[in-house]
Image 1 (cartoon, rainbow, N blue to C red):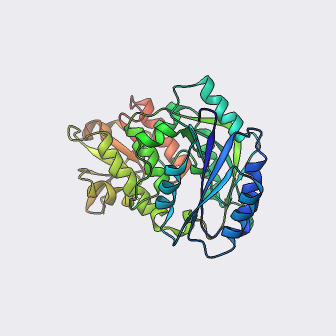
Image 2: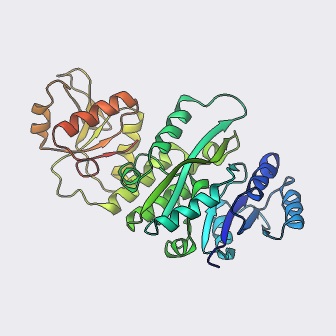
Image 3: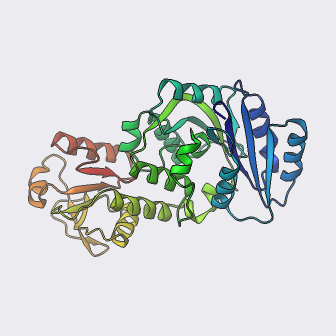
Amino acid sequence: MADLISILLPVYNAQPYLRDCLRSIQHQTYQAFEVVAVDDGSTDGSPLILSEFVAQDSRFRVLSLPRNGGIVAALNHGLNACRGEWIARMDADDIMHPRRLELQRQYFDAHPETDILGARVRVFREDGELTVGQKRYQDWGNSLLTDEAIKRDMFAESPVMHPTFFLRSSTYRNMEGYQDNPWAEDYDFLLRAYLKQARFAKLPEVLVEKRDTPARLARTDVRCKRKAMFRAKAHYFVKDRGLQDRQTCLIAGSGSSGRLACSALRQEGVVLHGFVDNGEVGRLRTVAGLPVYALDYQQPEPLLTRLGHPFFFLCIGEPAGRQAMETLLQQRGYTPSVDYCRFI
């Protein structure tokens, strides 16, 4: 159905927020949609709420799984039932802005070359203010609007929020849906699409209000934790490019992120030659059995020359420090995604 948008909505014990989500869908300015809700074995009042909306609105359908099988199984089960040419992802505890479907559908008319479209989000919590890390992640993701920007930071973190995904159903079929891996399914999907040279975009409007709760998978699922995310990055980075011909591969930043990156990259067979930090020049130390080179930001050439124009994985957690390192590298002819990759 050329004009039909299928809203893919997995549901698991979402009773406190589900009505708000479903009402926000009903109030869309674009009304040619169907909701494919997959009840993934909920044990709370979610099935009753879904049945209420099905009784009120024929565009709502519920697929009930007998027991909780996890997000990947629920998503793929729902994908098989979607009838629309277009698919919009949604989470059961989030809220759509009224023009979300309209604006995302319009974008494809103007930019048919796009494969995966997202939108800006506003993250909110009902138990307090956003943490510094949450605010930083929201602002970083919202700053990536173009295909070039999204691909440049693809290995930093997941650059498109899952409940803003909007794409053709044929794209999902070509990607063979979602895969069950030891890391988050949405980031996995984006990384696989990146390897297939998909084109990405993001609308500048905030079209989803993303609710953060203590029970959210991003907080509770081990596949969403930092160690798992580094495994995903390393796995697909190696698939994307080989580093065998590089004389030296270094990790910029020897803190916890750098050490996690080191472990994940080594598991994928990447040969690392050490870390670079802004510590005291001349001080000798090792991390994970590798030397840590102290970089003099005022006179970096001697070290960079000695190491032979190395490839850098940037794992500096502090934004100002990471920006200083990127500036230093770019001033000396290093190209993003070619000579270095942001890994956090």
